[in-house]
Length: 321
Ligand code: PMV
Image (cartoon, rainbow, N blue to C red; front, side, top):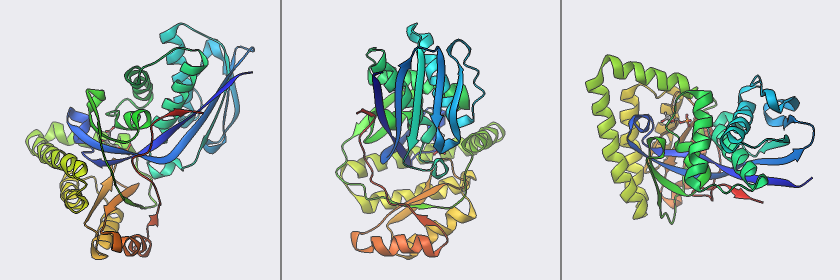
């Protein structure tokens, strides 16, 4: 039977994590590590799911009874199907396979990428045209159904691609024309749990609203400056802003000794600046460096116990094969 294959990119948060959960802006870039999803209709009224990357091998359930008992990464597919069917009043048996060219442990946004790739694939398969904003709203709802919290910046990156200025829930999704963004990425080796960290900041906000909103306002000022630095391709300034953003994230309490170690190592190797990327507590850090220091900076990541992950930034959004 006719099948559709879609590819959605992962993301890296550039600036504005955590504050973006509270109606403030962030900057995010799409990375060329993609999630591939293939969907086709079947006539058995079942959903068959094959996602070997996350240990799901030919999982089956009745379409009329999407049990949502699958391992978490596969739930994004299952909820995506359910939300798509409910919204557009369609149904069919489905066979879906997914394959990732990045590990979900890096924090590159595999959950949002698989959600977007699935819903985009379904819209093609059922010939239902969705604007990017409609695709965003349905995908964001799906992610919230499972995770409960989140700004949706990762969903926007998977759909629109490129580099975005983004405000909570897609209130603003503004593509930024970026000619270069040579990010150097270091993985700490530690998997962070985004929801735990979002909850931690929520508690802090409740207990000490003045300090936390002041930190959020300071981060937002940096985000606005970062947007200009991106537009002007001023990597030196952007690197400095990264370091200032990192200081504020440390004050928020979301950095970790491993992240601090990698950030310090790249600064000593000559980087313009560095910060954690995402919720914190682990996952990845990002750095910008003078072109002639890039090799030293990536070596410094390895020497400090991290893994250097080569990536391309500003990648295309979701596409259909
Ligand atoms: O941990 P990540 O890469 O999913 O990033 C989380 C960023 C937060 O601002 C903390 C949450 C969000 O959804 O914006």
